[in-house]
Image (cartoon, rainbow, N blue to C red):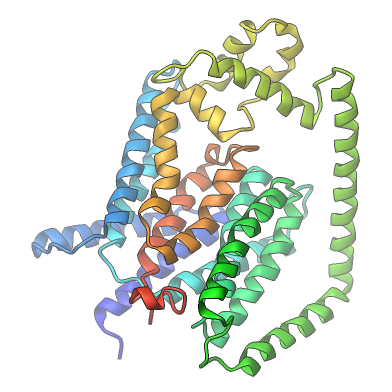
Length: 425
């Protein structure tokens, strides 16, 4: 029979992934409010009972990086002319995630909540996508940002299939469904950056898999029935084959293919314009923004120029040799590059804070956690080169929750079991 502590852990798991999943497809703060209240409850309980629950080093460093990053953001907003109280929402969410992360670090969150929670996120995303009339599937946010957020559970599930030898049949099937459903949703967003993320991901994990294979000489645990692995796969292939023949699937697939072809044709046209010296267009705009970004790098500031992107762009454009060539960029609200965007807004200090925030978990986590952390960090690290995910309030909140839950739930029992079973129920 489950204890009271176990039921509370279940409740926390539902809140964390309910918060993430519903906010991908639906804008609701119900789960967020309940989650913050639960974190406050854990904190007040530990104070009342004078408990000193140990929090791992990686969790402490992670939450500390969240706090520092949010404080730099707060200061940047404070020094920005025209900033309003609503602008402080995003750094406040980062700060709240730091508090929640530290409190969750005191719990023994079970592995199942992480694995099945990822499936829950994609389930909500698929439900929304199926019933949504779209141009580019955006989930109430920029299509690129939505794609990077959705790609996290997809990559997590691929990691689970590659490296978790102790995965059960139900969990294995859920992971397969998550990958298939998630990849379909990603095609609906028509975001080219996802292809780059997937390429970088596989270029990273395939060498790791080869190394582990040579060490262990087996892709499957001796106790794992190959029939038990192949039977669900065969069933899923059959289901996918049946679904692919439905009228609805064919219709949406043809629409998606047509739109991809249109975007490829548009890219070809943009490249031709760039060769003629015209930087207008989707790709040309990014090239022009990088030109301005290089100009910004030549004049570094410690605390940045503030959060007003238009004012920053205007200043950098006016200092360039041929400013009129870049005047059209003033309709943009960011650099289409997370690193340049943060560097110009918050200076060297803010940029370094972001790097710590992004990569510190990889440095201090154990080897198994690093594998799963790649699924969360790569979409931001790679996608941040061509987009600005952190300009989205959704990404600001749920990226830290993804990382926190991986750090809390992935706990190998010993060095020998690191590539067998992440944790036990």
